[in-house]
Structure formats: C-alpha cells, structure tokens
Image (cartoon, rainbow, N blue to C red; front, side, top):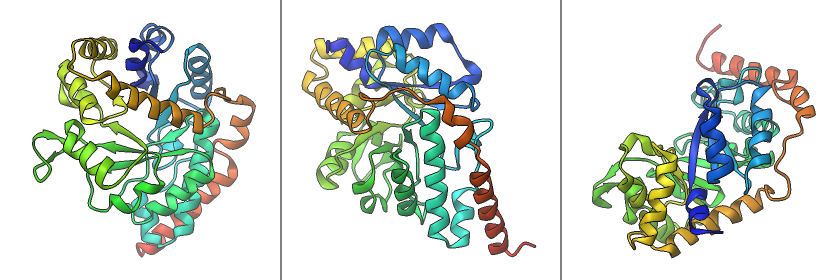
Length: 304
C-alpha cells in the first residue's frame, strides 16, 4: 500500500442516507480508498444495495458500522426496533439482553453492517449483549472510554469508542481521544487492549488538521468523521512526510485495522445476499420477541 492509501484506511466517514452526496461518496470510496463508514438511516431496500455497491468499487474492503444499540429498526425503515437498554435492564433478564443483541446482530449483518457501536459500558447487561452480537458474527465497539467499568469488558470487545472528554487525572492538556496517556498509556499498556481504537466524531472538535494529527499520534486506529475527509487524508500524509507523525504509527494502525477486517471475513466475502433481507430483517419472529421484551419492561415498571 502507498502512504496515501494507508492514511485513507484510517479515515471513516458517516453516511447519512437522507443527505446522500453520491459524487463525494464515490470519490471517498472509489478514489481515495477510505477504510470504512458508519451508516445512518436508510431502509431495508437501500442499505444492502448501497453496501454492495460500496464494497464492489472499494479497492480494499470497507468496515461498515452502525449505531444499532436498540435494534436496526431504530434507524432503518422496515427493520426491528427493540426496547432501549434501560427497559431491558428493568426486566432483569440477561436472556432478553442476549436475544436482543443476537437478533439485532443478525439483521445488521444481513444488511451489510459488520460492526455495531454497542453496547454501552454502563449497561448492566453489556456482557450478555456482547455475547449476543458475537453469536451473530457481528463485531462489537464498546461505548465509551474512559469509563470506570470498561476494564472488565475490553477483552471481549473488537473495538472501543474514545470520547472527546477531558481526563484531568490522565492528561491536563488533551481530551481522551487526543491523549497518548489515555490511549497508549491506559488502554494499550495498562488495560492491554488489542482491538481497534476509534475516536468519537472529530467534527465535534473542529476543522483543524492538527486534530487529525494529534489523534493519530495519540494512538487512534480509526479517525471517525473528520470535517473534511479528503483534507484529513492529505493532511495525515503530509504530516508523515513532514515528520510530525511517524510512518510506523500509521503502519501499526493500518495493520491492526486490516487484520480485524480479515478476521471478520471481509477479504473473502464483502457482498450482501439481498435475497435474505426480506426473510431476516424485520421478521415476524424478531418483532414478536421485541414485543415480549416491551411487555415485560412495562410490567416491571408497574404498568398495566
């Protein structure tokens, strides 16, 4: 891979179906070679067809993720929406938590989504959710670091989302997503996390390219949603050539990302079997399970 291709692999965009810019997306996927994207919105018809197109034209397989913590139906028209984590927790049922994640993971994978941004570390049934997602062969990105309870879950996670949160005990100068002390010091060395480190959306920190450089130097593998993805790729390449970011830093991040994609089977099989979508996504069995969970949560709250 060229240096520019490696820099592009670290950049992930958000793709909102309601704000679709086909020319920009085509350039980012086909020409620039971004590493992946987080999907938002869409329907059971256009999500899998879009994923198939993107995977077909991408030089390297894309890691497609989505925030389906409460089921794909919370975002995707025609998919199954499940009660929120708080409602499941109110039932006290780990079986519900695992079933919700398993069925959500099955729908996600059928749509072409291979990683879910879930569960939240504060969810009392987070471990059961991870087991459910993994049963469906969907990767898990824990939300979020830093969190006092994250250590016990990291060994089972494929990735972790790092917040733009000040952590005075770790770093007086930088938020966690920009902090070597937080990512390399705590996550990597102290907690021995070997999965992907994904920044929270970089647009929240502004538009400067120094944000991209600092996140890479801090140890992030994935730079999520920079304000200008093309400029981020160019800026990261320039930073390496200018000695502000070590090429070995880029190599470590990209190697970790490509190995994770290989473990997911993305190099062997990128495409979605669209014939399965209608049978799996939003199925009667999944909707019935979601209703049973909602009824149990209502009873737990003392409703009639």
